[in-house]
Amino acid sequence: MNTASQTPFIAPPQDLWAAPRAWARALVRRAIEPRRDTRPSESTVPLNPGATTWVVKPLGRRVTCESGVLWLCFDGEPLDIVLEAGETHQCAKRSALSIHALSPSVVRLA
Image 1: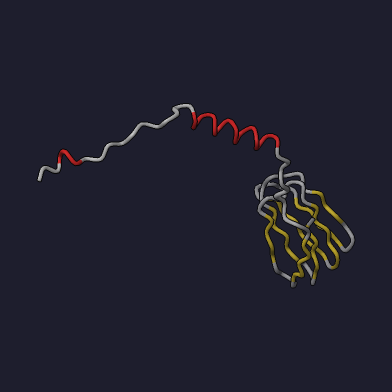
Image 2: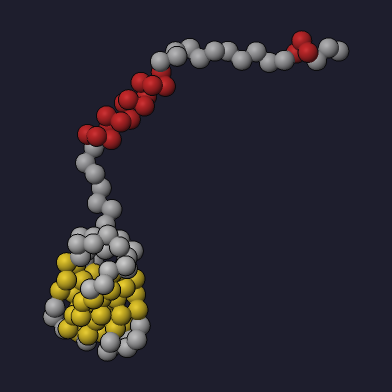
């Protein structure tokens, strides 16, 4: 039996322009659809003295000290922020944010 003559025939696509049109439709659909909010919802985190939590993408997030004292440090930034109970900070930086509890604290991220 000759196996060379039994190679499968691969048919060309019926419409060579179908793939680019499908991509164009997908791009238009993406531009028209309302964007989903990908930001995490509001959360409250209790921290023991000396505990640290990180916010990887803080830009636009609001950090509120519900109780205690918090020390906020943006990665690579020389300026640190200290928040006492009732104070809030609106993050305007993209670099990671560490939140360190100087006393028993509760932090709210929105």
